[in-house]
Image 1 (spheres, rainbow, N blue to C red):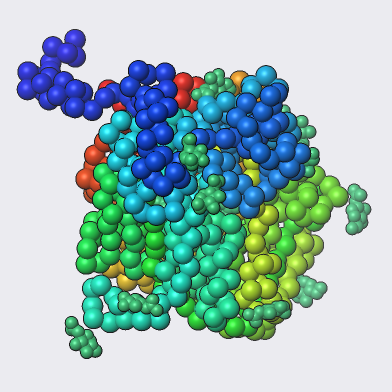
Image 2 (image 1 turned 90 degrees about the vertical axis):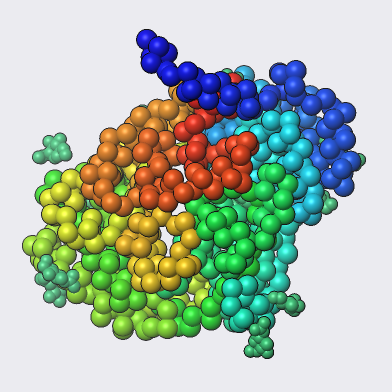
Length: 606
Ligand SMILES: Cc1cc2nc3c(=O)[nH]c(=O)nc-3n(C[C@H](O)[C@H](O)[C@H](O)COP(=O)(O)OP(=O)(O)OC[C@H]3O[C@@H](n4cnc5c(N)ncnc54)[C@H](O)[C@@H]3O)c2cc1C
Ligand SMILES: *[C@@H]1O[C@H](CO)[C@@H](O)[C@H](O)[C@H]1NC(C)=O
Ligand SMILES: *[C@@H]1O[C@H](CO)[C@@H](O)[C@H](O)[C@H]1NC(C)=O
Ligand SMILES: *[C@@H]1O[C@H](CO)[C@@H](O)[C@H](O)[C@H]1NC(C)=O
Ligand SMILES: *[C@@H]1O[C@H](CO)[C@@H](O)[C@H](O)[C@H]1NC(C)=O
Ligand SMILES: *[C@@H]1O[C@H](CO)[C@@H](O)[C@H](O)[C@H]1NC(C)=O
Ligand SMILES: *[C@@H]1O[C@H](CO)[C@@H](O)[C@H](O)[C@H]1NC(C)=O
Ligand SMILES: *[C@@H]1O[C@H](CO)[C@@H](O)[C@H](O)[C@H]1NC(C)=O
Ligand SMILES: *[C@@H]1O[C@H](CO)[C@@H](O)[C@H](O)[C@H]1NC(C)=O
Ligand SMILES: *[C@@H]1O[C@H](CO)[C@@H](O)[C@H](O)[C@H]1NC(C)=O
Ligand SMILES: *[C@@H]1O[C@H](CO)[C@@H](O)[C@H](O)[C@H]1NC(C)=O
Ligand SMILES: *[C@@H]1O[C@H](CO)[C@@H](O)[C@H](O)[C@H]1NC(C)=O
Ligand SMILES: *[C@@H]1O[C@H](CO)[C@@H](O)[C@H](O)[C@H]1NC(C)=O
């Protein structure tokens, strides 16, 4: 019936676009897939830097089908090590997004019957050492309708650096790291003191160099995270409260577009591309080869404080008080951040709470673990800020015997010691999906207490109530982000401007074995979070989420990840990637495509 309503003009337009661009990206099962000798010609044209994908865990499978040169013992013992994973051409930290295609025996999702295939991993990888190789390879792939993915470290939480039947551009060896104290700003006739960094570098190396020169850069918390996806998605970290997000610290990028152009993007040239690449989403607009980034003086006198709030006993009364305490604690954070504090808060339930709070009883409440830090400060100054908040929480809970609250503040040494103390465990290999929101005054203070408590309880729901769950609440917005000049904002989600907290919740069960396949396990996580996304939408209709650490299956991702920038980003994407060769999950324009993890096919939706 619908067809009858199509006007002839529309019908012609529809058929024309279909004939111009094929409905699906090509796969090795299609006749149009290049022959081995075609691939060899590509290899020859890119300085022999083309790799056939060798899943590292191939050595764990009978006959080592892909000829991995790393022993299965090593693969097993290193599998969960994100730093090790980040050095490999094909591996990603969350292999469920590569359909668990070739896992070692003790990995999450491993099944002895699933075998070792390329599956959701790319078919070929360019071990890029020059921009020209990247340009030649992407042009070649576009001409043959082959999907392209870009991988730096492979740390992406949503597997956006892998894809079935793709040609991968691996940036690991684009590892320049130089300082230029008089880099000429393209826009004004002024010079700046900058670092020029290859997009395959890891933040740990950049920070190490900066600290040795008395400077600090906008890293995240873990040294193995790369510049690529982190900057293009936003990039928060220990100094974002003070200086803003990493995307706002870029003065220039060198970019290879999938049409094979090598471009310089800054405030004077290719401004639209430069704008999109600062926060408008990773892996979408081209392959960034190099960043020019700002740096700041290293902070002195780093003070760290730690707060622990637990229920006094296993009673429901005590549990109730902890939920109220959590609501009050979160509402106090914006003022504390305006006064100079940053940090991270962990809220946990069930057995997670028991272990974080070292409880010898079970609780239906929460345990709150808060770490604060402040730069160029003193323990006494931190105590003066935090003690009144804790006194308030105690008082609201009816005095001293209802909750257990401890707080200590002390000198954390220099920035380097501080940074190592907050660096995470870099654990890779798990199966997980998170759901997150950026929260500001509107959500944390202006919303009535009882509503906040109700929303928080939904955010803390766990599929397994006994095991419980935890949320990581980063104090990563606030003044530094809010005060970023408009011209340095780029395509960052506008909600960051009013955000104080980046609330990352968990609780879904992602288990590809019991679900039957990675596709089904991810679908069931998406279903589990559907009511939570509805809750976030109610609590924070004008806010959104940090796309790099969020639920990629939120049906409302356009608004939630990109806000008002979305339509403009679609135009820029179409300009620089007209064949839509760069697909990523919940990326700009991704709703026009469907990536089926079971078949590995990437096709247009009609
Ligand atoms: C242990 C860990 C800690 C983290 N801590 C933080 C944190 O403190 N703050 C924070 O903001 N985020 C953090 N994240 C999230 C992080 O921002 C994302 O995982 C991000 O995608 C990492 O970027 P990457 O380049 O290292 O990863 P990759 O997986 O290599 O790439 C991620 C995405 O970026 C694209 N991409 C990578 N390089 C390029 C390039 N040169 N050109 C074009 N596209 C490219 C890829 O195609 C992919 O879409 C953390 C993640 C992990 C695993
Ligand atoms: C590309 O050429 C180099 C050098 O001959 C070779 O080592 C490599 O295996 C080739 N790549 C592929 C995919 O065959
Ligand atoms: C896998 O086994 C190795 C030893 O064989 C061990 O070192 C490693 O921690 C195990 N990893 C996991 C995820 O269980
Ligand atoms: C993905 O994994 C499922 C089983 O877990 C399998 O049936 C399917 O063939 C795989 N798809 C690809 C492209 O490897
Ligand atoms: C990638 O290329 C560099 C430079 O040629 C080389 O040193 C490195 O061994 C290559 N990596 C792999 C995995 O082939
Ligand atoms: C710094 O960059 C400028 C261009 O902006 C260049 O002329 C100069 O040579 C560079 N200096 C160094 C030390 O690389
Ligand atoms: C840029 O500034 C320098 C010093 O301030 C001056 O010597 C030079 O002429 C200026 N160049 C241009 C193109 O304005
Ligand atoms: C405590 O609360 C739980 C649910 O949160 C309920 O099942 C239980 O009956 C309550 N216990 C008491 C003693 O009220
Ligand atoms: C828990 O430990 C406290 C001391 O820290 C003790 O007083 C209490 O009896 C213990 N409770 C249980 C249930 O073991
Ligand atoms: C203490 O609580 C009161 C009332 O809830 C609030 O107005 C005040 O800002 C709080 N003070 C602190 C330091 O949190
Ligand atoms: C809690 O106890 C401490 C000493 O143990 C005391 O200094 C403080 O005033 C008490 N606070 C309340 C609200 O009772
Ligand atoms: C920071 O402190 C640590 C431990 O005291 C010391 O080893 C390191 O050299 C210091 N780093 C700098 C840059 O001062
Ligand atoms: C729930 O978690 C508990 C504690 O971690 C565990 O013993 C139990 O097996 C889990 N239940 C399910 C259905 O996974």
